[in-house]
Image (cartoon, rainbow, N blue to C red; front, side, top):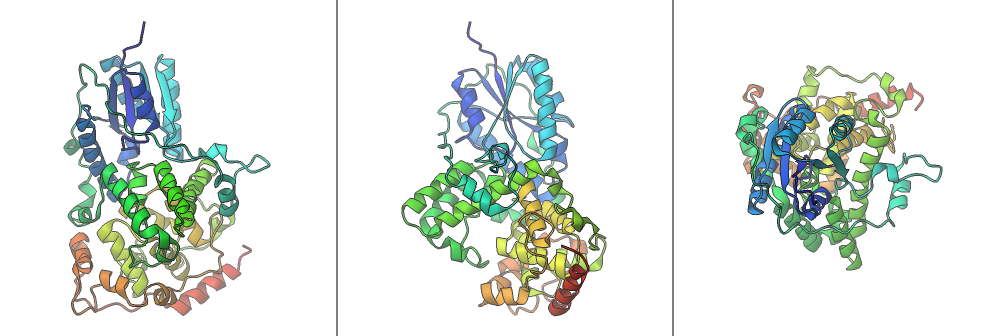
Length: 474
């Protein structure tokens, strides 16, 4: 007798219909499929911008499911297992499928859920899809994990990457749907306050928008990607980090588009593939050394005398884009207005905070975790530790980016700074003024405020950092 019981498909950071292994597997059975999202304790802990952006993604994805004759069931509770077990009872489902997550908290949750459901006689299965290469499948010749990017790249660049699956033509629906919360019940954007109205203009939401971004990048930008990607005022990157974060596009789809561009002779395509693998490397490290998320990867850095007090006035000046360093301040304003930041700018603001200001990298990591709509636990942690010097494959401790010379090199005409900084500008533009609409009112900043003097002069900060590093054996 064939099994006609429903399959619960537990969505998390995989809000797409195409190239979705768990969805494809569920639909191939012809059994009813019940898509579910659970607002559990891990969702509740998300920072303001990531949680708000996830809420937007869920609303959009629910519409996509409706177009397929399906729907997204929403449930909330501190423990996802409790909600899944309740849904199993209510629906008679005999299977629960999901796409794997790789951060330590999610892995622990998912492992416990899989064990518990199987004890209940439920077919609990996890599938790949958030990464191209499962972290445990990439090994050195001695069977260990990679600690340096270039050998990691060399190990995977010749591997086959699964061909993306098309979206299912139909998602079989159950005769009766279980009850569902509404997104409004969850208030996922509450912590954004008035900033959500500003940042919303810069969001590219959903699977169709992600595919359009990828197509535009491959058609118009990828040929010059290697040179343009460092120019913060240029349209020189894919901007796909936002969509990859929520699974609105898969890395497999991006990889194969990059390979096609390389076969067409577009010069920047291989560098784009290397950036996709840099993301994989971050997850590889998070899997093998999970302490990278909250502890200096190089243990000797834990004793470094960084500032850590979040109430420090200079740290707040950095958060507000009021350091007196044009490149740093423009980047911090970009972050607050758009929810993202150019990659070159991320390196500059991180270097200034950790080296010139001698501030713990975790202070910056936490601020990004609250403000980035493309926040990713692995990439955020590795990026901060790379710049601070405490991480794997790190920027050497003696590399202290000079924001002034970097600005001369990558923003010679001032287009980036002028776009994002209002103070001192005779006629500030829309983006520069938007910061004052997005920021908390209690910051009490205005476009006609005088531009501040540097809180840490560049030469002074560099000398102080090198002196502190010189007292230690790195």
